[in-house]
Image (cartoon, rainbow, N blue to C red):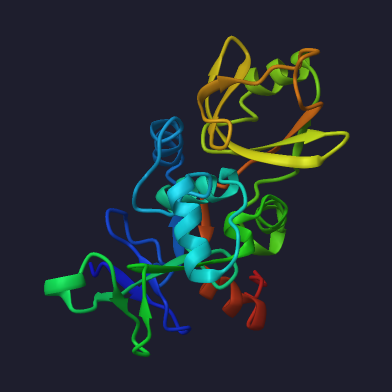
Length: 256
């Protein structure tokens, strides 16, 4: 498999070290929820160098130097990485891409200067491009709750008390690899993470910004959130291409 998949925009998708879930393969995909949860748990307290880290100072400086824009928080970006690892394919709405540049005068300034395909000289070896649905909490929530995209399994589950959490955890309604969004009265939905385990009827989650790995959800008086919203992800789903085809040419029902 090549290290980069070229998109129609000309930007490269970095695939190094990951399975090929680009959306160009089978018509149906399987969500490897344990693989997604393992990723979220593994990098919950650290960072994967394959990706730009939004709350790492050096990455924020590099991004600003190249794009003249500031990075936001890292929670949605991190959860998108875990979903991608679990088999969710990128598309034109949910994606993360990077373009690597060749060194300029490599024998002398190879580690300092790089040349873009246009010939422009830059201080960064990479340029990043990502969608709002990949890095933005609200856009990510909207994307994965949209029934038309084919990922959400049933209704969103809202939990606002310890007994509600225990009931949903014990009855099998929640599973590792599902998405969890934190809600407060003042901020609305302000943080995203992934369910990575359960313990005594309590949800364990992993995520970034407030770095967490198998951290318990708690509805105590000290909690910053008043409720959580859980998006249950289907075990399998159609590719974006297949969904588009079926929208144009719906399957005919058997007449018997």
